[in-house]
Image (cartoon, rainbow, N blue to C red):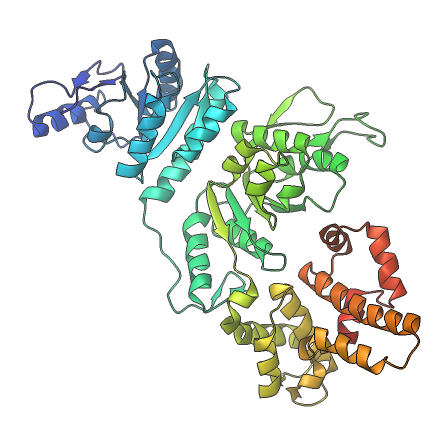
Length: 510
């Protein structure tokens, strides 16, 4: 048995529990349970937090806050032996002090993560020790606490610990294995059923979730499902596409502004964090946030406080944040374009949505759903998809994912004349191999002057290439321009020059 002592710091008992004492394991376990009893003599069911630190000033400061919040706090002066006694001491959370000798704190996190993977761990770090916090996350820590401790930050940490402990410990009713629809999302493939189960499990907590996936895969649907599964379902759900606003306006939109903060700020205005109080804030395309906005979002996540642009006072907010991105945030961190500490704060839980090309067996189910929705919306008769058209839908790679399929089905339903949707009702982009079309045009243009033949081939290439790019980006001009490395105005001029003034119009022509 390693030599380790845990000290109960509940002043109502003032009991020291020394696991190094020569008691039997049963006696030592009993001694710890006695240390957890209050003055009433009843065993406590409160969260039990173990702080591993040599700094009594830090422990005492943390004790005052934790006790006032109704928790039990135990203390170990050294890391050695802690891991072996976690279960016996009935610990829920371990906070390791970065200032333990050598790398003891990080070695303890490694050991706890390996032996007790469901245990919640955190690191107490010095002010500004961002690298230490990031290293702690990499070792399995779920959070960190700045020292010297501040009451508001510790309380915010305890609230996060409550939800994360619930997530890790309790069992959750999950969608039935045969379910085809969940919160407005459809799928029968194993990967989508895993997504449904994850939403059901995570939704009822307040943990921050990072949703990844290509454009058009349904990230906002996931965010809404997480909100609807939570206790916040009757409170606001507010979404912001971070790429839809110039960087200088995003901060004002998120945090609000005071009168005179900038040109046009004629009165005080609250931001989306305040508007979402009690509910959920969905930050789509969070990879497009600028550095200053990233720092302020991180601060809001850590402290639960926001400050309006141009203001001097902070406002407490109770907001669950769900973020989404189709960009490689890990690569952006490596390039210095995204804060690493913010990334770790956002992805307490990561949820990845598969592209439609990886779940093609869901295409018939999704198509049937969209047919029903649009027939009812447009007052059209119900139609089925012919076998030939179904084969085309299944063989297409869907670069625009579910959003593209949705648009295709809506257009085909409107264009169809008979009781079935036939291949002729589908956009030609689905039925024609684009490289072969370009080659065919080149062959047909063999007798034309070079300049005219080249222009004809280039026009066909532009229409096919831009059609695929717009489909991948849901028809969003600004997003497509960024993906192609073009200015928005340049892309608009190119679309006009190729007689592709509207994405829907373009997809119909291809």
